[in-house]
Amino acid sequence: MKLEQISLQNKLTGKFYTRNVHTVAKELLGKIFVRNIAGEILAGKIVELEAYDGKIDEAAHTFRGKTKRNEVMYKGGGLLYVYFTYGMHFCCNVVTGKKDEGKAILIRALEPVEGIITMSSNRFDKKECTYKELMNLTNGPAKICEAFGIKREQNGVDLCGDEIFILEAPKIIKSSITASTRIGIKKSVNLPWRYYIKNNPFISRK
DNA sequence: CCACGGATTGGCT
DNA sequence: GCCAATCCGTGGA
Image (cartoon, rainbow, N blue to C red; front, side):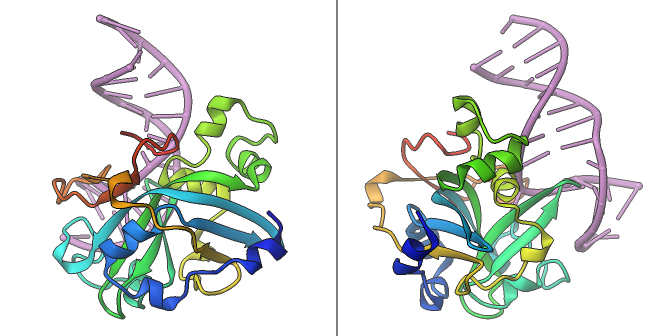
């Protein structure tokens, strides 16, 4: 897929992102997450994500109100929220809802679509990878950021711009979406707010 | 196959 | 000072 072909497709707009976080999360499944680095395209199909529902969700970064770290989550739908964790990893989220709601969706797994050589270089420091490594390229939130070169500088990027955006694609039908509890959290562990495409081999875990 | 622990910075109590 | 929306390697069954 070339940049010219990408630009012919429909980019999701502000309207898409300012709706309910769970609605947006489920509709983002199957869409194409794209990073354009000076004309080079990296892209992956979104196959797994988690909704973080602001002040009603103890596991959300915004549960206790606004801080320096989470301020992007309060700026309204359509921005990228990137945070640093465990002293070494970045994870990226799509901010949803209206201004001051503090809600976002953690992108947990992608199926690689374009730019796989660069992703492999970013992840494994080599242009060739084994089948096993291919399946391990973007099946986790920090792996995605590593493969796509997403760091603090991308925190707050507007998804309606040209650097990072998401392309329209057919909606995945309800019966092909699984909802489960979220991964790696210690609070609100029973809320079924992780959504993924059933049977997709690129999800981070069953 | 599974369970466990170390890495390593920075956010917030 | 505690511990995190993770990942990877190790060691045992």
